[in-house]
Image 1 (cartoon, helix red, strand yellow):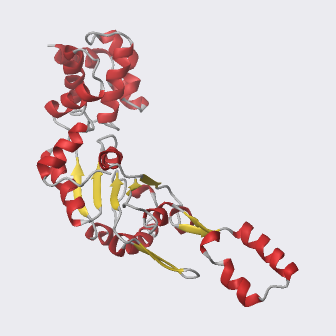
Image 2 (spheres, helix red, strand yellow; image 1 turned 135 degrees about the horizontal axis):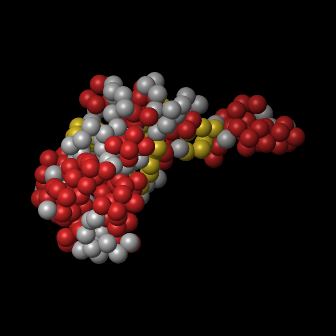
Image 3 (cartoon, rainbow, N blue to C red; image 1 turned 30 degrees about the vertical axis):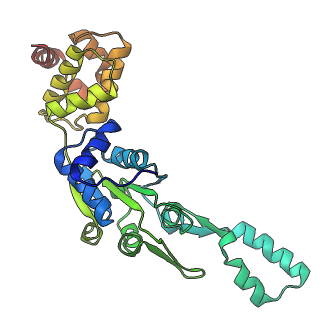
Length: 297
C-alpha cells in the first residue's frame, strides 16, 4: 500500500514513474482530489488520457480499480446493486417446505447474502481495508436521469437501499469521472467534483509520452510522428486523433521496422490514426504529401 503524494511535485513524479506524463494543472487537480477526498471530473476529447488517469492512480497507490463503464440505458441495477431474485425464490420454496414463519423469511430474504453488488456499491463497501479507485467512465454515454443516482454517492459516499438500509464508506473511495462531452453533464454532478479539462498535448509533451509508451521507436520517427499528428489536429476532421492513436501509430510503424515517415507507409497505416472514411479520404494525394513533407522537414 502506497501513501498519498505529499505535494503537487510528488504527484507529478509519481505519475511520471508510471509512464503518465501530466501537465502541471492536471497534476494539481489530481493532488487536490486526493488531498481533499473529492471526486475528480475529467472532460475532454476521446483519447486524451482521461481513463488512463484512473488506471495509473490505482497502480500508483496500489489500490483496486473498480470500473463502471457507462452506456445508454444504464440504471441502478447495472450500476449499484440488485437482488438475487432467483436465489430468493429458491429460499422461499425451501422455507415453505420447512414451515418457516413469513416474518422471519421476509427479514432473511433481504439480507446481505442475496445482495448482488455492482460497481458503485463495491466501491463504498465497508469491507475494503483501503479505499479503492472508482472509475465512472464516459458518463456522457449514460442517460441524464442516471446522474441522479450518482448524487448520493458523490456527496455522501453512501447508497440507500430501501429493503436493506444505508451502506456508507468509512473512507471515501478515490473517484474519477470522465466525459467525452457528447452531451452536457448536469451542474449538480460537477458541483460535487473537482473539474479539469484534458486537452490534446503540445508537441513536447506528446513526444515525452511516445518516448515512454513506445520506448523502442527511433528518436527521428518519434519526432516525425508527433509533427504529423499535431498537423492533423489543425485540420477540420470529423474525429481528431488522440494520444491513444498516436501511441498505436508509433507502435504500428515500429512493427513495420520504419525508421522515418514516407508517403507510402503513411498511406498504408493511416487507418490507425483516423477512424472515419470521410477523414481518410480527405488525407490523400497532395494533402498527404504535404503533411509528410512538413513532418520530415
